[in-house]
Amino acid sequence: MTQVADQAVYKDDSQLRQKRMIAEHFARLARVPQSGEKAVYTFVPGNLTELLQSFDLLPVLPEINALQSGMRGKSKEYIQLAEKLGHSEDVCTYVKCDVGMLRSGNVGPTGERLPAPDLLLLSYTGCFTFMKWFEILRQEYGCPAVMLHVPYQGSGHVTAAMRDYVVAQLRRKVIPALERISGRRYDEERLKQCLERSARAEDDLVWVLESARQRPSPIDAWFGAVYYVGPIFSAFRGSQDAVDYYRELRAEVEQRLAAGLGPVTPDGVLERERYRLVIEGPPNWTSFRRFWKMFSDEGAVAVASTYTKVGGTYDRGFRHDPARPLESLADYCMGCYTNLDLPTRVDLLVRYVEEYQADGLLVNSVKSCNSFSAGQLSMMREVEARTGRPVAFIESDLVDPRYFSAANIKNRLESYFQMIEHRRKGPS
Ligand code: SF4
Image 1 (cartoon, rainbow, N blue to C red):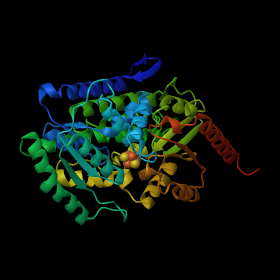
Image 2 (image 1 turned 60 degrees about the horizontal axis):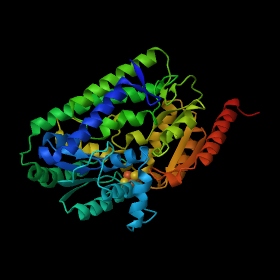
Image 3 (image 1 turned 180 degrees about the vertical axis):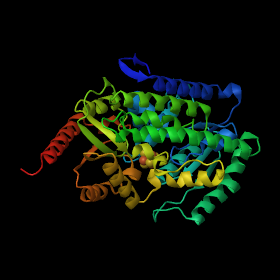
Image 4 (image 1 turned 135 degrees about the vertical axis):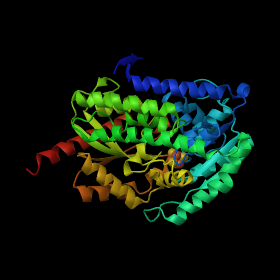
């Protein structure tokens, strides 16, 4: 394992590999006008990346573009432009960031122009905003759209009827749309090969996430893990690149574990783990490293998080399965975190607090996201009652820097860490 300082930030080999993969993907997207390849815009939860790959179609993930714009300091101007165009302050800021980027020339995170979509593929998992977002893009681009309706897991499990419903849509609507766009016939053998590679990458990802059960945890399962889930959440699941990336990442984490090292933070390896937290909700992207430092400066490590499950709950046992290709795509879509009902989310959080020996649960409530925020306060109360461990609440936003108050967050974190210390001492 080597670590290099990249703009004074430590990066592992796996992170550098990921950076290269992403750069190559965006370069390929920028070459679309010359290459004639086709681009399909789709969302992270419930994405059908393997199916797109089997047709040689290029996925574009608008949420990833928005979060990257946030990390690169571009989101504020994009959001303000979208608001000037009439999008209300209450609209999810990912949407406004994307609309602002589109109206500013559609230049993606690497500085290269993104191709217009040949198709909008809407896998509707748990968020109404997705539907409105693609309605806007369909108007802007005048391109075709196809919707995969994914039933919400309202009763906490997937029934055979739900699975059949999704598979029937894949066969009758989604696959024919992909055949039309790509000019190719559906090739199930090719899809199976992609799914087999997905399952291998998923095995390694789960191993990495579960390494956080150890003390000290060799990873940060929220800040650090957003890099780890990047390839599997976006354009790479099902590719050999993803298999290689997760194998390399796992080897790095194995070495850190064997050496008794903590996670790599913006300031290098964490020296002392003082607090182990389970975190619910997405991070803030506009002040990502500053936000992370507020935790790492205090020795606070995320040992499990729900955000890293929005693109699949692989640690609940799900794997893409080449033996049941369309059925396993259906199960994948229905199993994403924000498609789970609240009691199932609470069960998962309780399991995380207990199995990862966490000091407590911290909720980052983001203003934009109803899909995450709904029910968080009652979820907190229930987790506290069932685990007996302290819970706390902070607020920020995904990509709107106007909603990131460093002083408020720092104060609340300090009070929370004091509360944990107090609990450790026991009744006086
Ligand atoms: S509301 Fe939440 S889940 Fe929906 S698009 Fe916005 S960030 Fe994503």
